Length: 119
Image 1: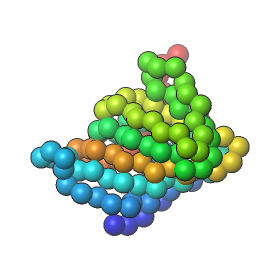
Image 2: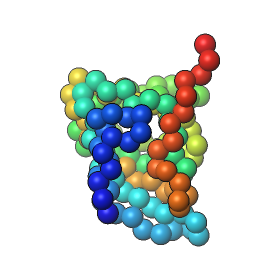
Image 3: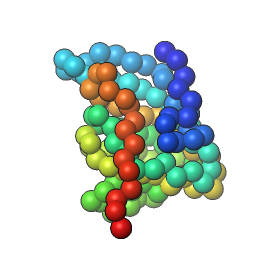
Image 4: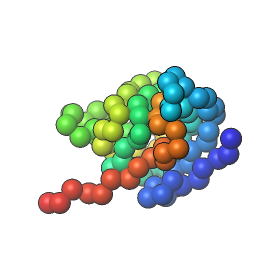
């Protein structure tokens, strides 16, 4: 597995693949990543082609999932983002790192940027 630096539209964010396995169902794969993000970074609105399960290793931030109240996260917290849910994260004043496990459709990008809604 290789390291994916700065996903499109997310400068400074680093994805480090830890494992990738086929399944749990035909056409899906399970990907584990360590994600590092600089202090103060806004990870803009995006989705994933599957479910995201994340554990915060260090740092803090505010998770915003459309249709749900925002949630403050810090080291030791875990969260799940449902399939296709548009979400964003504002990182706090120190760098953050997380371990994410995504169960996603094979062949699709892990991160799909979503444009800002019209005012």
